[in-house]
Amino acid sequence: MIKTKRLLIAPFEMKYLQDYFDGFDAEITKYQWPDPFPDLDSARDVLQGFLEQMERGEGLIFAILSPAGKFLGSAEVHGLTGDCPELGVWITGPEQRKGYAGEALTAVLGYARAEYGKRAFFYEADVRNEASIRLLHKLESDYDVVEQEPEDCVTDSGKALRLRGSLLKARGPEA
Image (cartoon, rainbow, N blue to C red):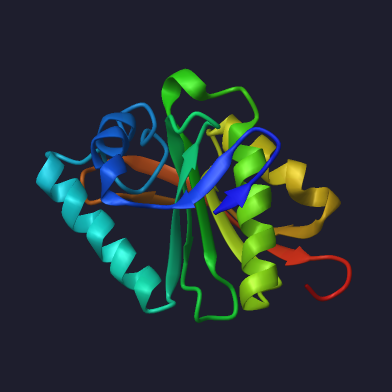
């Protein structure tokens, strides 16, 4: 478990399944590749796959919790065995605009650096997702951020996205 000033960041457990399913709604996924899960079983299958990746050391999935244990969102690191794992974070609608995503992502990045020696990460966000873009720039005090050109794409469900990938390279001494 990772503790920050205001959060507990715990390895995801299926006891958070319903909260994850409820929070990962159309508004949260508006500018993301995935869509909301059609049903609880679909959510369980995907999250079980993430848990299996974590068991194999290929990824991380964390529940972001209040000190009282309330589910606030999720933070993920995919492709942990590669040179540049991909980051993901989301916060439930009612808990947004409180700085939780930045606090959680900073803590998870620190964990990935300390525990796995990772120094470069990939972060992708739709250019219209202003909160995600602001979050990325909050990391610039500790990371060099190299933005790529936006790419227009259409998801399997027909969402039109304009995704910009960014490479985050850690500054400072090795973790």
